[in-house]
Amino acid sequence: MADPTHLTLAAARDALKTKKLSAKELTQAHIDAIARAKPLNCFITETPELALAAAKESDERLARGEARPLEGLPLGIKDLYCTKGVRTTAASRILDGFTPTYESTVTGNLLHDGAVMLGKLNLDEFAMGSSNETSAFGPVVSPWRRKDDDAKIVPGGSSGGSSAAVAARLCLGATATDTGGSIRQPAAFTGTVGIKPTYGRCSRWGIVAFASSLDQAGPIARTVRDAAILLRSMAGYDPKDATSVDAPVPDYEASIGASVRGKRIGVPKEYRLDGLSAEIATLWDQGVAWLKDAGAEIVEISLPHTRYALPAYYILAPAEASSNLARYDGVRYGLREKGRDITDMYENTRAKGFGAEVRRRVMIGAYVLSAGYYDAYYVRAQKIRSLIKRDFDQAFQAGVDAVLTPATPSPAFAFGEKGKADPVEMYLNDVFTVTVNMAGLPGLALPAGLSSNGLPLALQLIGKPFDEEGLFALAAALETAAPKLPAPDPWWSA
Amino acid sequence: MSVDSTLVRRIAHLARIKVEDAEVEKLGHELNAILSFVEELGAVDVSNVEPLTSVLPMTMKRRADVVTDGGKAEDILANAPEREDHFFVVPKVIE
View (tube, rainbow over the protein chains, first blue to last red):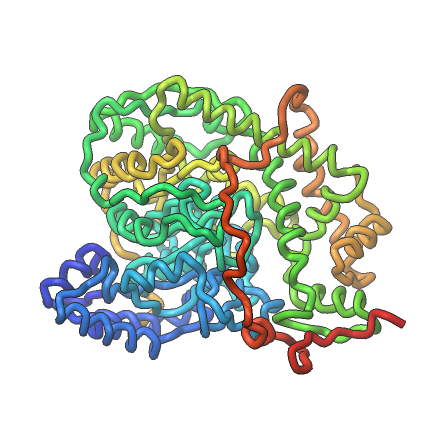
């Protein structure tokens, strides 16, 4: 068989079942690809021995005809998911030496369904970033490059290791997490498919917390079908997460190819930002045309509070982060720096352990929650969150089935190009994705073309709560209509 | 709203993060940039709007009040930077 790392997850699954390929061959091919891809820095921890042992078990099960849904399929795991017996870092020095004694529910679900873990993927520190430049383990480099330009391009963030590894064919799919766009923006930057499901669809238990009212787990994969297969295994009720929803998980793969005729697609006028690049505007119009051709009905909608979503997010997310990250105090796990007394020990430990972006956000969070500012900042932002959600509720009540927007305001940029002088410049990457977290809705990013300089561009579909099936059907229709992106040229393995 | 060096130090202490003198000015600029970015929220009319605390209508499930987990002292201490028997060791807090 030709290089099996280029198979889709669905095709690999079928090849394993029909014995055209063994799990061992498939896993070894990915281990070899990872070994050649060191310049991309996708992995913080590689687990080839564990992967081969799991593949051996998968081959035995396949031989007995007892294959589970993801039997023998090699995946990468974002290093924000706790994995029993395997170092987990959140890309932070503060978790130095931390090896969980438990498995996150979502990775447990994947392993239970037969998946093979190749290792732990790099990310922005504590999932705070849009370019992977905040990782304590160095940035991930995108497998994509601009036309006639060797500049290193960012893979997006925070799930940049996940997006780059999937795009570079180092794994068939990967787990990711999304608090303000951290699945969809890196998927958009790397020509991959990423879905952030409805808040509550996946358990957050055992995933290092950033902003608990916004965080959701989801997959990044190379096709809509592959994302659907992975989400089905990841999702589900978990008594250990009180916000996970006790509702049956549909067979999302069955939605691929379902008709979208008569679906009403909202196009929000507020997303046509001043200064939106012509390239992105054209891509969006193209997406509208593709859905029309597939039989959908397009309606202009208004989401009037859109412009307030990002500033409100930059109060709520840091506030929750400052609270969640209070646990890193040098006592129970991770780094400890000595101090004169216990407070000095805390302050030294956190100064040494947190990188600049995490430190900024924890400080902003502490400030907006502090006495005298709580109502002016935090409560006001929560009220604005109500208004943002109400905008979407009203659109859906008026009969809109889903919303189509661009995924990002620009294609991927080169390292150091954004956010050097002003952190807000980097935050603007999430302007189209963050509303979805604020309203708790499902959102999916999928590749729709290439920019004039040869980098992937993506569209975003936003759905009603728990209508991931509707999103997969629409995404599959767009995927069929859109030009198929080539695999990035493997310059890194020269 | 402007973040001066006194406020930077106060916030840093609230967050239990040590800042060096040389970092204070730069941090002040960065925090100012973020706070001026969120300033436009002041323009939104939020009268009669309830703060959103949960995106989905959820009722917390109840469970029987019984012990379902525990007896894992070794697991819990496994990652401790400093321990003695089944205790975390910290600098002295009581004089």
